[in-house]
Image (tube, rainbow, N blue to C red; front, side):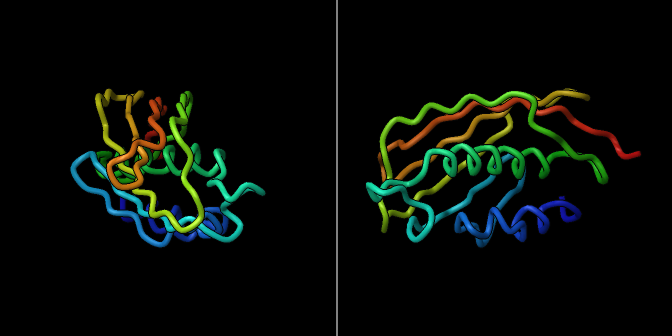
Length: 132
């Protein structure tokens, strides 16, 4: 995990979406975002594409915390349901968890919340890549 997670945090797109830190251990992850700036649309709402991307990122981090050294993963399916909007100034907490991991495929879920309110839920399937 230590090999790939810093790249995820430092990626320019992820930085632009407000990612500063990712916590991941034991097949679970947590990412907190303060919504603002370029992360909102003209109506002042958190962009849905950012929600999708950060849900995927939360699942990736959760999976990385369980993979053997040198293994990586790529998304092969994602489904995100947006349930309510988040506004500029909101703090959105994303959590990811691994549901089942095989040798070549892993199934995960993510949730985004503002306080007790669910903003989005996602299911993500990733293909696991062995080191070359």
